[in-house]
Amino acid sequence: MNIYNLDKLPTSTIELPWDITIDQYNKFVDLNQLEGDNYKQNSVVIPMATHINFSPLFPNKIDRGLQNQSLNDNPILLIEELNRETEIVELKGSDILWVRDGALIPAIQSTAFLAQVANWNDEKNLGIVASCGYRLLTVSAIYRPNVSFKTHDIRNLDPLEVQKYELTTHPPNFIIEVRSYNPQLNNNNLDIQQIKMVDWITDGAESGVLYDAPGGNVHLYCSTSLLKLQIIQDQIANQQQIQSAQLVPPITNENKPYDTTKSFNQIYFNNMNPVGGYPGISFRTIPLWDLPIPKKPTK
Image (cartoon, rainbow, N blue to C red; front, side, top):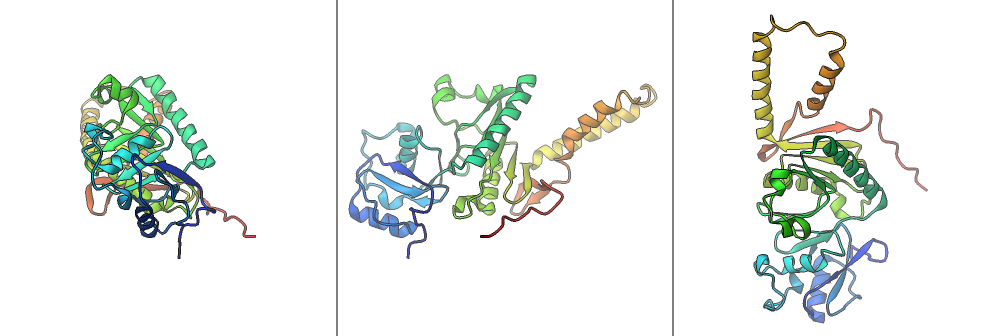
């Protein structure tokens, strides 16, 4: 019995760099439990936001005329490259590829976050804010976060042509991922989204936010090394404050708003907990609302 009814789910057409046989296609739909009546020689229809195993469609030998030297003969990378301009394609490992959920509400939320981070960066001029692709070598993945920030130094590690058109292998400093709502699409599962956040930090991103409106939470992730550095900096600052206590006038009411704001910027990354099995990664969950999320009425 087919699990994924493509007539009832948002779908995407993935173009293939080679022709496939009907036998390959049948193995593909059986493995991924898809409907099997959409055979074409050089494309397949898949549900969006769903991990799909493309290995039955791989050719026995890559045509050298199709191969990009940087792709290391990996067919899944060739498929991603071919569809990069038309779909928000992500992948992990050597077989699994999916298209990101393009639902309207998460798109609006992503745009709002992108604008907020961009406004902050306009004031600070610390780097580049974008929504682009990253090749995570440590976990063998290609991800496209809803929002990413990287310093000028990180960006300048790439040649100009890579900065404009290609995937970078240098992870951003900070990312935001937005969880979508449709529970029928398996990539919207919270566990899968959280694994993705761990992948980001594992590959070198310093910190990130998973905005989980369906679950009513914000999940914060960061490299544990950042917390250790913050502790050291706080200890130094406290020691300096003690040593200069007799030299500095007491805080007046005029100073308090500034000090409160400065402290507030650090509060959300306090009380972080280690991620199980990943001692180098810490996380914290913060509720979006004080009251329980109202459930949608059933018809």
